[in-house]
Image 1 (cartoon, helix red, strand yellow):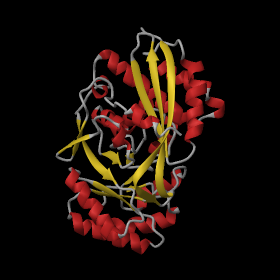
Image 2: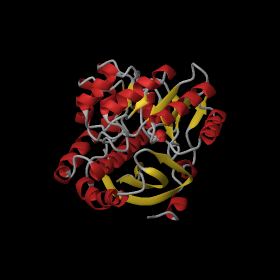
Image 3: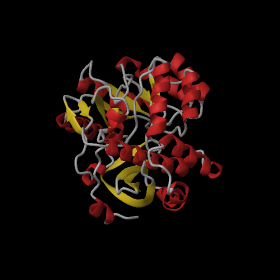
Image 4: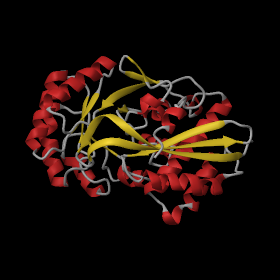
Length: 362
């Protein structure tokens, strides 16, 4: 069993090809990418990453560069559960969320990548294997796009092979959201899978009004209608809103998901592997959802997450995000008939363009 020889952190600012927008962050012109390379004593390497929406990546980088080598150097690389506990408790007093959990997530992804590479298996197969072809939607970050531009973006996504689409809601007037969802429904047809994401914009009462007015458009789900911490509010929305609710991208621990699911406050649990604690926690959330007979979806990091959903019998949709990382990956996500295909390469299969990223070092 090879030990961890060293960890190498990277911190980059990735410009976006188009300006993105949502109800929480406003205009998004770049995102920050944190990478970590875990090398074992035999020279094998696992790669992990996390990201922030333009700020606080330096805090993640400091944890990856300073704290993690001291915690993990010399440890057995394959004992991922043990290493996760060591990271969690070693950083617990200043952690339990925020940059700490993002850093843990990146290292955990790298450890699983390393383990799968050493086994000569694609990650989805190592995790149990269910079906490498995963339903996938295009996650639009498009709140401020004029309607004609929104429809053009939709046509571009259809031309790329997507057969499900998510749009943003949460504009200043609810009537504007309703008009835009109605236009998208008319454009796509009655049976096309359409989701809407409010990015925590509303109070519970506002979200209930929105859900009821959006009910006729038969959304697959309404995502993050309120702040993630309001468990009673989520349960009320599921109970009274008449629209399925997806949430979880801003939850940071397994226990957060446990409380949300047990309260009846979610229809589609939605962990993000880069901020929930990594692959170790994502898979536990997926199994927890399965125990409650709930379908699991995902947020961001589609090149990693396609493997995780490919290992889950209760998977629903993979989100494909438009964060511009494809330009720095050798073989981006592949779609076939609206399905994302988990690659058969050993590990998660992500090969970064390190020289290209180096020019963007933050």
